[in-house]
Image (cartoon, rainbow, N blue to C red; front, top):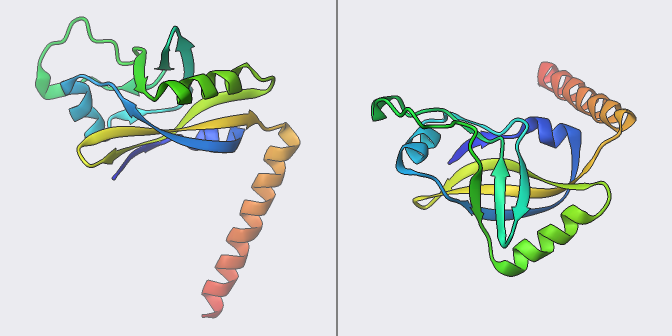
Length: 148
């Protein structure tokens, strides 16, 4: 079951490769995420020591949990990856023009997973080309639907 999708990243970046990672969350964060109170806009992955962290992922406070005075909705959260995957992604993030962005958050079994992608930023003219292709495809679908 999909909880959140980063559509802005899919538009702004050309996704070269995708990986699945676990996400370390507290109990109330998990409940809030499962309720769909999660936003990936502006989120990205960084590396500190031997860990991969996701920054700017917003998980709203879980209302039934009561007053949580110290809760930060945009806190840095740890990603669960193998050492080889972390080393590979760290190397990719060092390459010029590449970045690591979260693409979607979903539930797999009883775990909350995040799909991260190695991405290259799109130029403005590439974005316009994507819009043209999408509009043309939509127009074709509309024409086929009206005839059938």
